[in-house]
Amino acid sequence: MTRIDEIRSEFIEMWGRMSSLWGITPATGRVYGWLITQPDPVDADTIMAGLSMSRGAVSMACRELVDWGLVHPERVGGSRRVAYRAETDLEKVVRAVVTTRKRREWDPVLERLDEWIPGLKGERSREAKVLRERLEDIAALVGVADEAARQFLSGGIVQKLGMQMLMAKASKARRKH
Image (cartoon, rainbow, N blue to C red; front, side, top):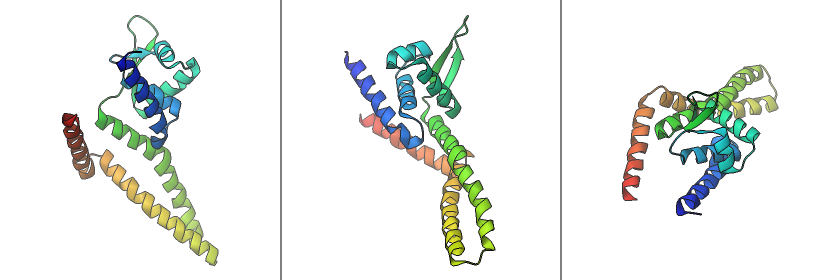
């Protein structure tokens, strides 16, 4: 095994382990990590061979990554085969993760809280009052995160300053290495 193979393997395993932090399965994280290490788009058979994964697991992972906007399918010229290219623009990756997490997690939570809280306002019991107050606290906290995400995604000041700062720090750190 060459040094590049060792580093690639360690990177893929690390990416798979940390994938749950942003809401995907370890297998899907491994596929994305593997695709990041590839210089060109690759087809499902190549991914299967490179990761020793089943066709079904690779297919499901690629579909999920396409849904997240982290992988782009491309038709291979003259055939029905599809090759997958990882999104490597870090700003686009961050925006895709925030968009998907917001859509899958924060939006449904806020919708349900918006239904439940008014239903408790007419209740007079101590139990209902405590539950309503706790749900309102949760709604306020998730609402702040949701608003920050909305501003970030709409290109507001949070996105402009935040991404500029992150990218500047990343560039500086890269130059050190």
